[in-house]
Amino acid sequence: MGCEGWIEGADPSTTMLHGYVSTAASSSKFHRRGTSCVPRPRWDISWSVRWSASCARFHWPRSRTWSVSWLPALCAALLSLLCYLNSLDGDFVHDDMVAVVGNRDVTGEHALSALWVNDFWGRPMADPQSHKSYRPLTVLTFRANHYASGGLEVRGFHGVNVALHVACSVLVARV
Image (cartoon, rainbow, N blue to C red; front, side, top):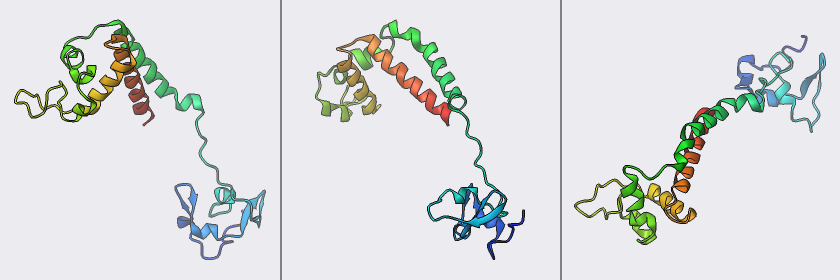
């Protein structure tokens, strides 16, 4: 378009890298306005986005709208919420009886520091009968659920777990 070669010695293959203009282009004193190259004002920082090796207008790829880009995450959130919504009215089952209801680390009968020396089931790690499954952050969230829900309220525990599952589903969908 008549502007080719206006930066002397600029290699067109090195001036663009992942949509950003390299230092060879940033030393230019010109940019394209309309059909001809004109001096670039000092305050115009958007010139580097519009500049290319041939002095043609550079456009960023069109970004998707909010609704389209978040649609998979929204679907994942709704699907995971619908799948586990019926668990809110359930009861503690299987290992919940030992890991939550019978665990003194969860119910607050042990000191908070005991979380770091006990296994998942509330036994000291040094105990020969300990399962040696060390998950202090999980037990800490169970304890926080216990205090937030005012005791062993199943709906509070299950609500937090469903919310965490929905959040993880959204994060995976956004990746």
